[in-house]
Amino acid sequence: MSTYVLIHGAGDVGWYWHLVEAELRGRGHDVVAVDLPVDDDAATLSDYAETVVDAVGDRTDLIVVAHSFGGYTAPIVCDRLKVDLFVGVAAMVPVPGESASEMFTNTGYAQPEQEDSSDLAVFYHDVEPELAKEALSKGRNQSGTAWNEPWPLATWPEVPVRYVLGHNDRVFPADWVRGVVEERLGITPDELDSGHCLALARPAELAALLERYRSEVESTEAAT
Image (tube, rainbow, N blue to C red; front, side, top):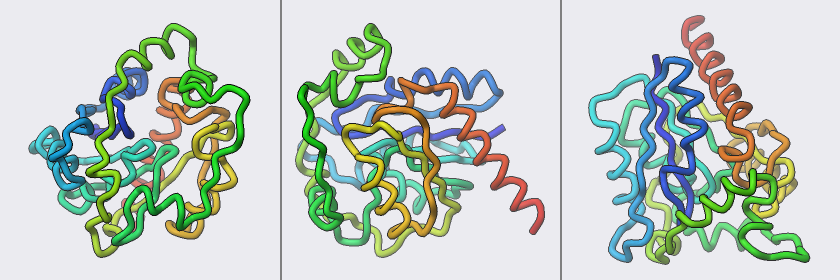
């Protein structure tokens, strides 16, 4: 049994992962999915990570999974705990000293023009309508403190990394994500037929992919 540590993105809550959590628990795993203090102007990225570390406690066999802005918190968690695998899910990929706001400028990010720029159309266009409505109701204000803070690690932690993007993501365009992941992580991302919120739109497929990654890493470790 592994413990999946699921980290949500900007202005979100741990509930974002609830469908994936059910899939993973059904496969016999433990799951930790906390609410980060994203609406607290005093909270730093280190505080975000410590919230996760505290929730993990003495659990072992950890697989850390991060969505969107959670990509800035997850590597810090991996640096503080013994982690078997990190998975980015439409996640930002920081480099040392770079804030989240700077990442967009530094990587040539450009969000495609869209006829409907509402959160529903951009973030949840492929999520079941009632589920999308519930997700919107749970959104929180994202403080600019952590968003504008330079990423504090000197380097990425030594942990196996996998990545999956949403092929139809209207927030992080697939072409842009591929380039960032290949340049900064040195890997080719997998893709699901999804928008930005893969955990709500394709929870079963995402859980199955996470399980494939876990199995691959376990097989590699067993062979060495």
